[in-house]
Length: 280
Image (cartoon, rainbow, N blue to C red; front, top):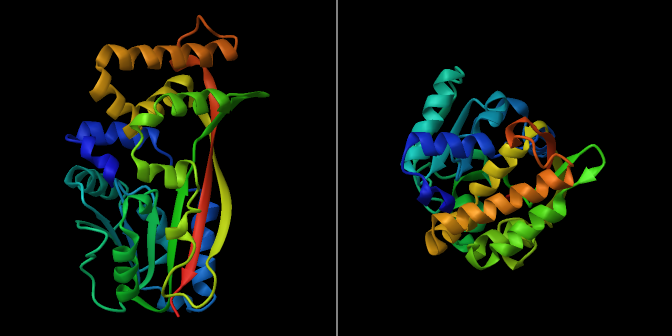
């Protein structure tokens, strides 16, 4: 949700959406599997995706529920989500402007609340209170997110270069993002859900983008709020220089220093963490 402060046009939102991954299907299937342990499939009425952005995770929930609601506090993202949903003929998903602490749904009306790559921006006490209000008994809260990606090509691993870029811009990283990028939701706010009588479940997944390019990777790094904060502070030239240096290191490591980055293919692995808890 917080990254959305930089998005002021549909075109910017589309560019952001193109370089950001959607959750792996296995992760979504695991959420539904856990939900069905206590709730019959016939009763999977409503899921809420909080901080939905352009609907990358919201749309993946659509096949499992009669009604899916995506909520975000960025009007531009909601507009893009509606466009994408309509173009893909997804008729059981509805998007609306809203906040994580005021979901605007009735008490005990939802079987699932999901927050993908967004919960680290929330004040978690307020969020947990609202989740407890809207979840049915035995309903599930699922929090997921990805840490720094690991680009590679054949046997050449490029994760150290991504880590270096991250550390270079670390003074400009919003502190909340370290909850997922560095700590993988291991800090105190994510150790337990207050409405669960049992320990929450932690599981790990990977999403591999097989057909990416160096240009795609550069676009992803430019979508970081840290990069945008760096650019705002240091200026366009300094931001361009740091991206040029990063791109040169990637291409040199691949022994393709003189090639166009849009033609240099790589794979990008996104490590995901999933937290699951059930309302008692």
